[in-house]
Length: 286
Image (tube, rainbow, N blue to C red; front, side):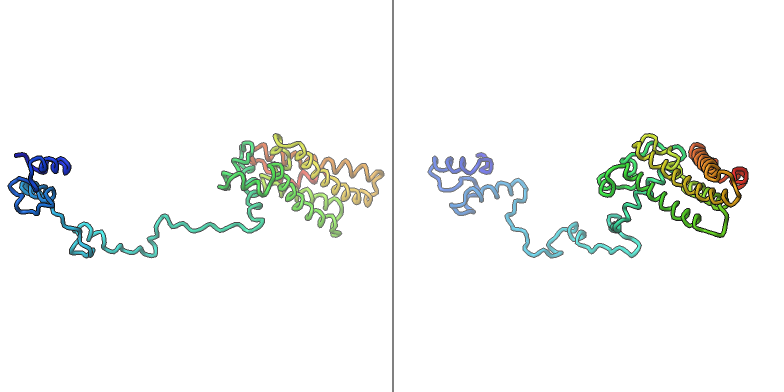
């Protein structure tokens, strides 16, 4: 007779009813009640094959004695990390910039990019990558790249004309000495700020809006006006026949000299300094 465990429950019941039997006719059927023929036969048949089909339920209490060794090992406490053994995932939160700080950082990054010996054209994507921010973060502070250059020109004008106003107002020197100090101030400012010198001479504005170049030219026009003021007073004291004309010529020569020095400084990759032999040059011009 084939083993009862080989039949499904429904097939096994039909097979027993056709023979008028109330329980399984296998040799183990006498050890089980009649109402559970399938379960008893299946257990005993598999037990006869040497397999363990115990119907015990898992222990309710999860103690170390009831768990395998692998589970007990997994429950061992994890050693705590020391003070110098912090997890790499623990990153210190970045400090949020103060109002106006991000704007200054953008301008400083732009000026530093202009200080490269052979700079490419400045793009907002490159500027954002340098600051490690998105381009949208730049546009929160500046509507366009032209506004960034406008802000640089604002800084140049403020730094230069605050000092030149003090020089012009000084009474301890004559007009020629004050004019020489203005020239020194301009060239020293360009030497210490190579990126801004590139903006002043127009080298960084070649592919930008034409209005920016016009504004850079206005810086030199204002400086020329201050130089004329100083030199005219010196010409009047010296008894010149045409102090206005002489002051205009001298101021124009000094401004052209400054523009040429800044241009040479930018195009020589900042190797030829603007203040090179400055005293000798001023002595010849004044």
